[in-house]
Image (cartoon, rainbow, N blue to C red; front, side):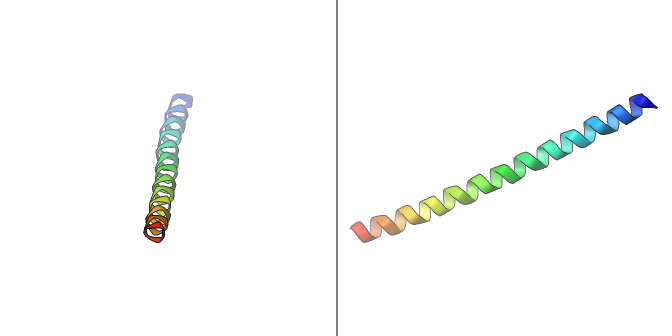
Amino acid sequence: MKLLALGVLLIAAYVLFKVLIGVVASLAWIAVVCVAIVAVVWALRVL
């Protein structure tokens, strides 16, 4: 029974880790897009 509980715990930890990586990656992409938009606006103002 303890082995089953350990397996379930490992699977849950793996899924949560994947979700956390996905959230961090999406936040990083949003930040990159925002920086790119600011860079384009700045470049158009300078030109």
